[in-house]
Length: 355
Image (cartoon, rainbow, N blue to C red):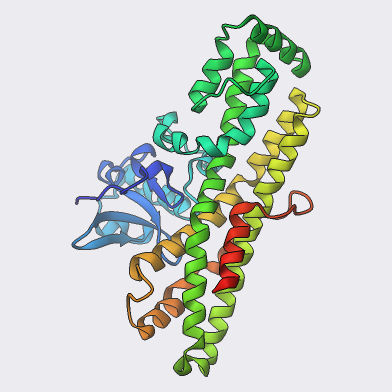
């Protein structure tokens, strides 16, 4: 059963895809498949994905119909069922939830973003790496292009000033200078997760704007104005998607503000507090972004342009697929008082007002 590879991002870079090759399953054939979140935000096993035949999906309780699950393979069904219930399959959420489920991953690199994705996030990472570079070198002139470059820059400094600043950093953090590489790795990983989530948020902004505009156009058509069920569904969908989007935006913006404050009075304890704060929100952030991404992907695939599909087909899809599962999205909860929305979200709001 062939499975078409993701066109832009690798499977492990996605919010809604989990390659089962990295999960310790007894059923080898099952490890050749992947879990995905379907349009209703349910976790299912995807047996194949081809342009000609579409996506072949099966729910966990039907695995016995396709695979030999006898013997120790019976445990695989329980594992798959637990994984399908996770709100997101992004690598950061997976690290936390696999540990909670007691599932040991064989290849730890499978729970890291690909080098290509990390490189794509360089612009989003700079807001977090610049104060680090300034602390080590006294300026931000030494620009690093990737997370690997950042760590290498600090672990093998050539400049005497850099060595002095490293010693000062170890004193500030109250850790031995030999522990600084580990601190930098942790720092980079925590903020790469925030850069990843910010990228996903901004990537969805224009697609959300487009969907809301097209749904609003449908609501205004004479034949649907008197359809109370459709009108209510549109209101629920719009309010939920906007609420989830804004919640993610507020939390990520709060983390940026807290990070700026962190560097005003840096210490290892303050960073570790910040690290735990970010980790405690990753599952909810990942789940919210996964839900938005899956819903908007589904709309764009079925209606790739404003003129694709007739109005009745669009209304049917909204009622049948866009609303289902939204009620299961868990609230993120505030980190602190919500700051002003960053540029990406302001742009979406401004564009939406113009429609």
